[in-house]
Length: 392
Ligand code: NAD
Ligand code: MG
Image (cartoon, rainbow, N blue to C red; front, side):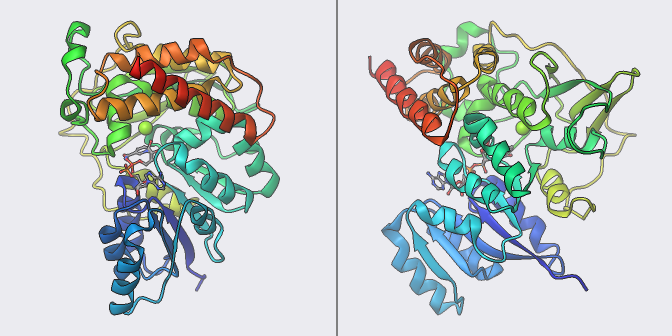
C-alpha cells in the first residue's frame, strides 16, 4: 500500500477549500489533511479540524484563537494553532504536506503560494491572483525547486486535460490556440446603461457557479476572464494573441485546445469545482469526485459567442495589462481588488469598477519584474491610487 498523500488546504473555509475537503473525505485511503487555514471564520475551521484532524491549524485573525484552541482540545484534536499572516507560509511548507491547495482569495495568497512552490510541493493553484501578480517569479520558483503546478481554475484544468502529456512545454505539440470559455456572468444580456444600478446581491448571484464573493463579482465584470487570460498565457507559455475568450453561457465546455491539424479538443462536465480539484489531487490518476457525469441524451444545445469588450471593459483592460507586461498585471489585480471591495461595501457603483482600474493603470507605469519587491511595490502603489480614485 502506498503512503497517503498529505494535503495542506490554504483557505479551507472558502468555497474551493470546502470542495477540496469534500473530495478528500471521499478518499481516506489516499489523502490525509496536514494543515487547514482561515482568515477569521473560526467556527467553520473548528468543524473542519474536528472532521479532518490536521496537525496544524492557522487562524490569521487572532481574535478567536484561544476559543478555537479550547474547543479543539475539548474535541480531542491535538493540533498546533498559529495566528498571523506569516503562519500561512508555515502551513504551506509544513512537513508532510505533499500537496498544497492554494485557495486563499486575492493577493493575500501570494506569499504562501510562493512558499509552497519554493518548497517543491505539488501546488494546486486556485489562487489565480498570485500567478497574475508575480507571473515569472512563481514559475521560476516552480522550475527551480521541481515543484508541480497544477491548475484548479476549471478552464485551465480543462486545458491541462486537453494538452498532450509530453514535457517540457508545448514546443512541437501542434497547439495553435486556446479557447477560454466564459459563462458571461449574470449581466450578459443586461444593457450597459443599467450597470450603474446593479447591486452587490445581483452581482454575486452567478447563474452557473457558486463561488466566493470576490470571484463572483469578477465573473460579473468579466475581470475574472481577464485574469484567466493572463493565467493561461503564463501557465501554458502561450504567445500573446493565441488565447481567445469565447462566451459559452451553459458552462458545460470548460475550455478547448485547437491543434494545427484542424482538431479541437474540449473538456466537458457539470459546473462543479470538485471535478478539477479531484483531477489535480489524483493526477495522473483519475479519482471519484462526487460529481455526476453528463448525460449527452438530455444535455441539449450549447451556445458560443464573442465577448462584448465595450460593455465589459474589464476584459479589455486585462488584455492591455497583459500586453504591457512587467508589473502591469499586478497593478490591474490590486486596483480590481480594491474596487471590488468598495463595490461590495456600497462605496462604488458597478460601472465604477473598470473606471477605477483604468485610472490606476494610467497612473502607475509598468516596470520589469526583477524580484518580489517590484511586485509588492506595484501592488501597494496601485491600492493607494485606487483608494484615492474611489474617495475622489
Ligand atoms: P472564498 O472567499 O470563498 O474563500 C476564501 C478563503 O481564503 C477563505 O478560507 C478565507 O478565510 C481565506 N482568506 C480570505 N482572505 C484572507 C486573508 N487576507 N488572509 C488569509 N486567508 C484569507 O473564495 P473562493 O471562491 O474559494 O476562491 C478562492 C480562490 O480560488 C480565488 O483566488 C478564486 O479566484 C479561485 N477560484 C475559485 C473558484 C470557485 O469556484 N470558488 C473557481 C476558480 C478559481
Ligand atoms: Mg475559472
